[in-house]
Structure formats: structure tokens, C-alpha cells
Length: 454
Image 1: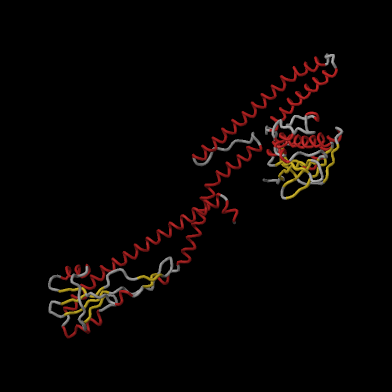
Image 2: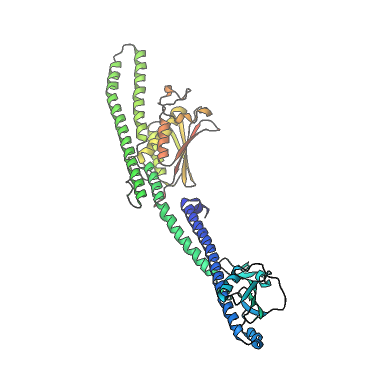
């Protein structure tokens, strides 16, 4: 769950869900307020009609029978009663009293009582989607002295309507539950639909790092997604063309240099001074080695070789057997028992470079392989003097050489580790160097395991 909400899909889903829920809550609050206002306005209009009818009907009843009539005609909200006290009135009538006086005519005298009826301040329970809440009636609630045309003085009570029992029968829990489920489902669909193109672009970028010749993205979806896909495809084509041109250029330079270097070697053989001849031939051999490894460095960034499933133990066994046949002391310990997804020739070059470095600078290579946490760890240790801690990171720089026993006297151009690191990173792996506590330098190569179907 934490991983889901940490992803972009989860964040878009949560944002949409919260946005829709908050908007729905605000809309419902406004609707509830408007509904209450309409009810109060309708009640006020109904109270005025009812008051007019009650006053007019009461006046037509003989004075001796008015009390009996009013007892039968009065309702909880609108009542016309006999005055038993002398409550003070307001200097000016209320808007309701003034409107009722206009409707009744000048023959009737109406005055608003200064004190509100006690029922006006009694809290009312209002039921809504947010649950029952207490509120006061905001419509007309007042007492009015009414003097009939025959001179009798009565009091009109305009009180809040009785609470409705119909609202208690509505179960909003089911409504809210269905609303939240439907909104969550729609928000999830929108989040998936929104983030799917981004996931496709991310996967395409990952595939591009593994294989520059990976098929281009399909131009589908919204116009913005098609534009991004087209730009990504154009970038991939430019990178592929750049790598091809660079590799071709280095290959051409290497090829063109081989011929004059060979002629120089043949001519150096004719030099009479043996010591001078040996030095010049050594320098020439170093130049040829630098040219070859420079081309290998360029090829280490080339990803034209097809990816395929490889058995790591078989690959290590093959590399160690070749090294042993070449007279190198190489011993392999452990068993990985896992498959890798990689380029066979590139991984072989990576392992060969690490073993050659160990043998070249430490006389032998002890290779230990182990599996764990979805990755294989290959450790190559030598018996050399190691490297100063400050130099451990710099030895991966192209042509960088440590000025100790790891110098040109022992061969090499300073590109072996650079090439190995490039290849490891292309396969989603990493390389690290440490000075082993028991002596020697240890190179640790970590490569991710391959799972079929991923």
C-alpha cells in the first residue's frame, strides 16, 4: 500500500479522489444551505397565506363562537389566540407584519410584538447527509397583535414548523458508500490512464540504456503523448547515429594506424643499437596496445549486440579455462546458480579485463561468486600491493594509471577498468574496489538476476 501511494499512479489517484470528495462536500453544503433557504422562504409565504385565511375566516364567525372555532382551526405553526397580557410592541412593524398588513387592507390594524416567542429560540434537529445537526429556525418567527374590523384584538403567532419525520427514514450511509466507491473507481481509472504513458516512456528509456537498437515507441494516445514519443524516437535515432559514427571513426583511425605502426616495427628491426631498438619496439608495442584498447573502450559503450539469457556459472567457467590455458593462475570459488540477461561478448570482455588486471598486478586471480537478493556478486582478488584509498575511485577514469607497481612497466593502458565499468553499468550492475584486509586488491562486480517474463 505504501509503495502504491508512493508511486505517481497512487499520488494522482489520491489527488483526484480527495479533489472530488472535497468538491462534493462543498457542493453538498451549498445545496443544503440553499435547500434550507428555499424551505424557509416557502414557509414564510405559506405562513402569510395561512395567516390571511385564518384572520379572514375568524372574522366571519360570531364572537360567541370564535374561541371554539380557533381551537379547531389553529395549527402548530400558525395560531390566532385571545390576548391575556399587554406585551409591548415595536415602534415599526417587521417586514412580515408590513407585508401582511398590505394584503389585509387598512381596515385591520397590525403591530409586531417586541419580544419573540420562546419557540423561536428552541434548537431544531436537522438531518442531512452529514448527519443530524442542531440549528435555529431562520425564517419568520414572531407575534403580531391583530385588531379586527369589529374592534376585537387577537394575537397571531407565527411559529417554526414542526420537525419532519420523513428525513429520519433516509439512510445516507449507503448513499455515501456507493458515492465513494464509484468515485474511487473512476479516480483509479483516470490515474492509470494518465500515468500509463509516463510508465511507457520510463520503460523505453530503460530499454534504450540496455539496447540502443530497441524498437521505437508507437505514436498513439493523446497529442502530447504522441509528441513526447516522437521526440524520444528522434533522440534514440540521433544517439544511435552518434555511436555508430564514433565507432566507425575510431575503427577507421585504428585501421589506418595499424599499417604505419607495422612499417615502423619492421624498420626498427634494422636499427643496429640493440638497446635502443628494444626501447623503441617497446614504445611502439605500447602505442599499438593503446590503439586497440581505445577501440575496445569505444565498443564498450556500443549496445548493438543482442541481449540474451546467460548462465553465469558457465560463462565464468569458460573465461577461467581460457585464462588457465593462457598460463594465468585463476581459481574460481562458489556457485551462483542463476541466469543473467546480457550481451555474451561484452560480459566476457568485462570478466577478462578484471581477471587480466588481477593477474597482471597481483600474479594470480581468486574469483569468488555468490548469489543473493536478486543479484550475483563476483569478487576478483589479487595478491598485489593494493591501491591507496584516495586512488580507488580515480582508477576508473580513462587512461589513469597509478604510479606504483601498476605502471607501464607491467603493461596496460589504464582502460581495462573503464571498459569493465561501462559494460557493467549497461547491464544494470556496478563495480567497486576495496583493499582486502588480508592484502591485495578486490574488485566486486554485481549483476542483477534475470527473471523470465520480465
